Image (tube, rainbow, N blue to C red):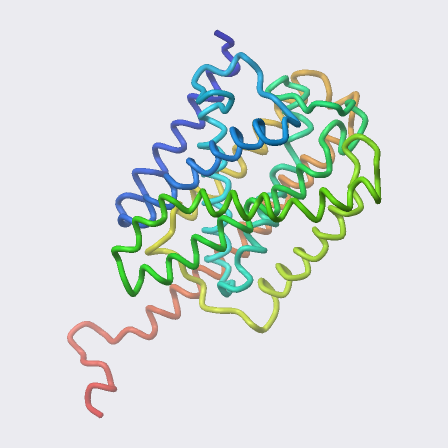
Length: 316
């Protein structure tokens, strides 16, 4: 048994169990959303390997469901749930929220995927270590955007529906199926255009950059534009705000440490710079999230009447 894989699986499982217990304390729907996100992650990994056969995982993973390591599904859940929590805390309206979710999720994969393949955690087929983004195909990053967009859109739609009919909460458990269908449909344009635009192994980076720029534009308007909602998500949040931010920092820290220990940081300083820059970006993100969250909380406290005093509108 490889101790590195055991460490990864144990650490991610502890994070996930803590998140699941916290979600369960908030209610049934947050718990179901987290469980369905994990199921979606496992479905993604199993389905992608069976349908596209573009990568495979190391045989050193301990707990797997066929070809998919369970811990990868748990990590997907933490990443997606964390992104959704931060988006809600920023006061992003639902129609824009999945785009912000996707930008937050891809900022992690852009930092760690090229490191993970050098650790041997998984291997991309048909692409050399200098092709794509240091051995990671552009289609992978494009797919991350669609994955998060699909799950976030369906989950938020169901939240609204379940607020009126609580029995619908159980439908969250089947959200992974239509979300995976949306992923397959979303991949089609890239699959058609990529061979036309860039036939190189792992090519299509220009296509990804164009799509990513569109996501960034929507996300930027959603976060800083005038069309914002009240920061929310405390009651229905899948993850605690601190855990959402802490998980992201832990993922960054783990892979930066691994990059240094395997010696690749000095051979490929661009990877180190990219990972450190994306880690550093978590600090202003955290400050903005907490500032918006605290301001909303303070506004709520000011709006509440003093104990024992009836609100003014009760006299009208």
